Image (cartoon, rainbow over all chains, first blue to last red; front, top):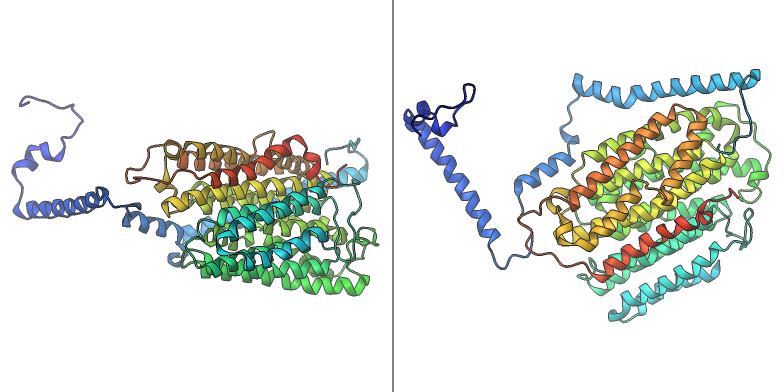
Length: 127
Length: 460
């Protein structure tokens, strides 16, 4: 293990990087321990609920609830910026005008051909 | 006509006078008998013209499939609501059933009305029971907002319709649907005539809904209880389509020019709502947006006014009614077990409830318009007649079909396949009632493969 050399472009994980392992400042270690304590608390909460023999319902994940709410209610937080206005224009306004132009010219051309008699209008059942 | 209407009205005393043990079985049996009798309407004496004609009501090839669908749906709604209302006091359950029944009565009169004003009054009347269902029996706080959107969008759009109908009454002297196709065409030239044209159609377009005015639909679908969602998706949207098909006759010379914006909105709506479906987290919301897309195709088919367009629209309306209602019932079975509509929380259902997966599969295949189901037949006829109208529409309708297949598959794979979430301990097994409910939804759909002439309207 001591003479393990990783691949030239790889990075060592933080816990195995010798610079990080031996030179930790006390503040960093305290912060790390605090975070580990929070994580352990959440894990304990989850496992209490998971292993509760009287539990009938789903375990609620508050982060998921917040995420679902955020996905479904973006409207109060909408800010009209250049990017969002461009999106709205490109997908909501411009296609309507473009399609009107396309369909109108196509059908007017068809109508002009019918009036001039150049269009092949044999019996068409599938109209 | 009366032999269906009077038993439906008698369903109200049935729900109020039955002893509390027998409310649901007796209401279910009563409505199922009415539904089976309504199937007799399908044996029509002729391909065109009206039958069962009376002073105010009649049947014709356009209204018969929609009426049979409505009558068929009431026992299904009662079956679906049995579970979530079981915790409520008895009188509230009776109230619920009475609301469903009154909605049914209004819908039967609306679809069979021979006078356009009677249709309009019933069209408005259906809003009240639906509003009460959504705002009283929905499950989240957003239901109030949903009820407001639903009521005011539809009401505001239908007031111009009332004015337009009164103008029509004044100029023609009668609003009866029987002579309307044979009336002389009106010289519609001024700007006021164009506004009259828009007024006639706006209510139905908002009801369908058309893409730009569809905001009420996802809210109403998501917040409504299961019976409310079923009746909304399966029948109330079709009221809009039916009204449009009836009114098209009198709107004639202007429609060639003025319908372009609405056809474009409808077709672009297919693409946009399909794309929105691909990123939905809420299952019922996905089904609601897919309804908007399908109804956009129906609106496009009706607005181009060709025989195949109308036929395709009618077939798609019936097939979509059954399919959408089946999908909403399936979503409800998930909701009753997990009390969440988030798709990610109820994955891997195939491992847990394998029989339900078969129903999910058939309903998903119906939603993505698999041949030979009538969904495909309707969509194909609409797409073909739109192609004849202008060849560029194939880009929009083809892309729409592709996206529909995409999100239907996404919905199926998300709910059925994949790893089972670790926090799901125990789910109630599938009840026989739920299997019966879905069988009664999907069996008519499969049987319609064999005899599509029942639902294709006037095209003989």
